[in-house]
Amino acid sequence: MTDLSAAIAGVRFRNPVIAASGTFGYGAEYGRVIDVASLGGICSKGLTLEAKPGNAGLRLVETPSGLINSIGLENPGIPHFIEHELKSMLALGPTVIANLSGSTMETYVEGARLLDATEVPMIELNISCPNVKAGGMAWGLDPEAAGSITAAVRKATAKPLVVKLSPNAPHLVDVARAAVASGADALSLVNTFQSFSVDIERGKPSFDNVTAGLAGPAIRPIALRLLRDVVLGVPECHPNRDPERSGSTGAARFVPVIGLGGIATWRDAVEFIMTGASAIQVGTATFANPHAMEEIVSGLEAFMLRKGYSRLAEMRGIAVIG
Amino acid sequence: MSPCADHDPFPRVASSARVAANREIAPGVFELVCDRALPGSSGRIPAPVPGQFFMLRARPSGVLLGRPISVYRSGDDSITFLILRKGAGSAELCGLRAGDALDLVGPIGNRFVPPAELCVGGLPGFTERAMRVALVGGGIGVAPIAGFSFGLAAKSFDFYASYRSAPYGLDGIEARAAKVSITTEDGSAGVKGMLPAVFDAGAYDLVYACGPTPMLRYVQKACADARAASGHAASDTAASPIAFLSLEEHMACGAGACLGCTVRTTGGNRRCCVDGPVFNGAEVIL
Image (tube, rainbow over all chains, first blue to last red; front, side, top):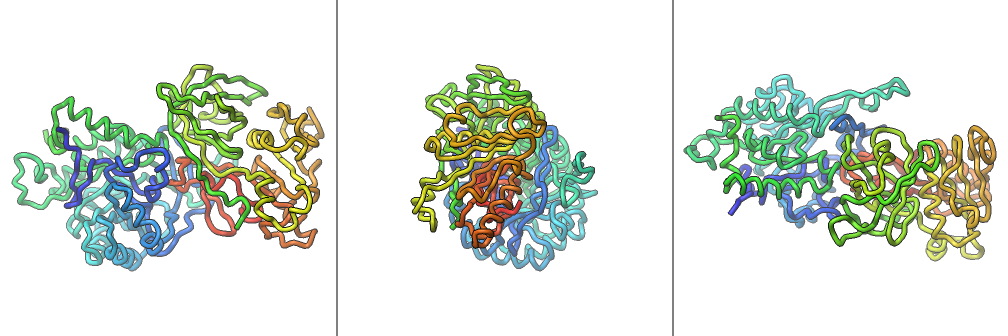
């Protein structure tokens, strides 16, 4: 019997495959082409306290094995989400994660308070959106800023809190340590890579917001290396502390990491899990192949059967701890 | 309520499909026919309605995402697309041969609501007389407009088609349209010039258009001016002439999830893929 279930900060996922924020709407959008109930979890689109119209101008540029986006957190606002989208999202079956974004600390904290009063089982604190002028990624570049926003949101909610990190931080491991020290129950990494594109006909930046976030298979090996850095560099994230792994006493605090960045196939998912990810998120791959996440779930199960792994923990982190 | 706010309620698949035929019908323009029967299963591609599109990608492919391609013709056994060879993704599609596989998602989007249904909807002033209908296609935008025309009564519409050079996508149109007007920028066929050389919006109640954004902007303004000239507010979404504009945007998901194809309207943001691609010209901001 193969057990694909994952537990992140006490929250159970029927399998470790989670739709990444901003790539799956509020869960129902793909309902006519895939079996949404087969997923482990769904992250909501990035939510801000007030509704946001998103960025003007071109929002997408495809690159070799990648996609640059400049959506700019278009969303109806947290009160609208709670009133209109959350209930049907919870009814879909997969574990729901609300992705909390913001600009100032006050808007993050107020958003967290509102979400805290709902049924949503988990909050992902987004301090890594590169596509908004105020806030967003600015909170995720510097350990001190990341620590202060995490601590403030931690005070505002008792919900399990995942902090989503930016690969654009000059010292990602330090940012991860700060988030963990300030109360993060889990980390997710990585958000998109800051990039630039030129419209050669106009001789101007392709995007009105000038720089934009690169995602897709092109970033995968770098995302995987950053996952390794964090898993080995943040003591609380190290597989040796994983209570589900044999040999661990389970006494010391363990902060699981959700890996993402260009995962498109079950093989990619296995790489992330063997590098120490307790669960994985899939984003851009769903655009290219709406069935990608379903195929990852079935491929993972077949791989575990073939290798004789009965639980994810048996292969988690094995590629980085020897 | 806008007469074209008709949210996409149709069944959709994401699947591999089989190419039945593909041929170049004009320089750089290909007519790709896809079997509706899905290989390796008893499934079929759901029948699209006029105005809908599919995300198409060759298999195998060197590009990441499907490309949004409008339906040209739809039958019991096959769906036909016209594809303009433009970038890497469309070039791959243009290079497909009979028997090759492609990945598709669709049908996607709302539709061109036909004149008869608008009449039933009770648009003020339209029930007393037959509606005067113009279909307008620009370049590869002729494809969905021509496809739409085959569901309309013969001789119930005028057809306008504008091209840079050689016309295409007009099979069977001459026999069915009350009038066909063609423009080419190089004068190789029809009237030399662009759409304004032949088109008078004031002569119509309903104008259905698909083409490059500058052409759609022209149709939008010409219809607004004609409404104003007949005493209606230019912003009146139900006054004659109504412009139904089919838009094209860069898209990633084709599912309404990524918000990459957002279109601005007087009523706020809309997703081109599933709230459109057809929008009322009095509402959409181009």
